Image (cartoon, rainbow, N blue to C red; front, side):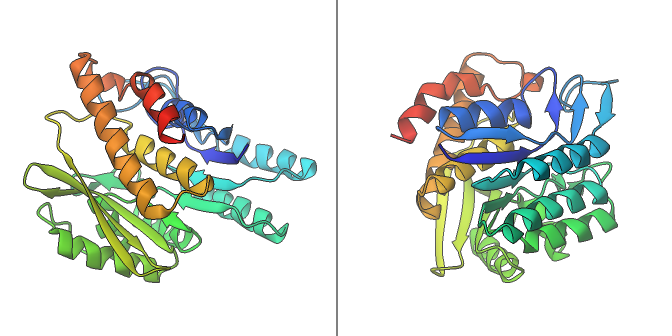
Amino acid sequence: MKTVVAVHDLSCYAKSSLTVVIPALSALGVEASILPTALLSTQTDGFDNYAFVDLTDTMEAVLRHWRTLGLKFDSIYSGFLGSERQIDTVSELITWQQEAGLHPLVLVDPVLGDQGEPYGPVSFKLIERMAHLVSKADVITPNVTEAALLLGKPFDANLSVDEAIEWAKELSVSGPAFVAITSVMEGTEGVVVAYDGKNRNVTCSRQTYAPISYPGCGDLFASILCAMMVRDIGFSQAVESAARLVSLAVYASWNAHVETRRGVAVELIVPDLVQAIG
């Protein structure tokens, strides 16, 4: 069984980050080891006064112990990282595995912002460090806001597919061979623009945009993409499957009247995830 170390925060209630990542990876036949970055009482979108515990010191202690065990991973997959120190810890994990003679698939979901704005704790320095981590990645999955922040470009809510393709190519020059830019809008469709820098190939995966938005969809997309690629499914096919399955999860959650702040209900598509991997 392939192994992925997932570096994300953990919400005790509602779907986001690890509460999406773990079930998705498991359903796709991949073993998840976790390196939690923070512990929260709930996910942050739609809840006030949530409890938050920073786990940076714990991350470093876990990594020290893992080194003594000589652990090996097929993939390293990171999501929201709340500080420069956490980004450096993930960089250290990547370097350790590579120095051990391994070549794990490195997927970085550069969680920096949305809707044209960086998230509250995201500083210019953190964006700079995230850009450095992106340079070490094989695959990145920014939304339009995050792509703009990484490239130092102004956000454009009406970014065209052709412009997004050029952005994806620019991001690939910085290091990652595979770039998938999510949340590109074209009429009533959401488009994932995917650039395969190894084969210089562009694909665009279109799904009818649902009239609702759930937390955790970006985590679900990146998790499916990671699991499929680590299981040797090609990038373009993996992107197409991930986009389709996320759309399926959103519509399933909507039809089941799942409250928005509870996050995307990955449980509703577990059979589809299992079937997708064959």
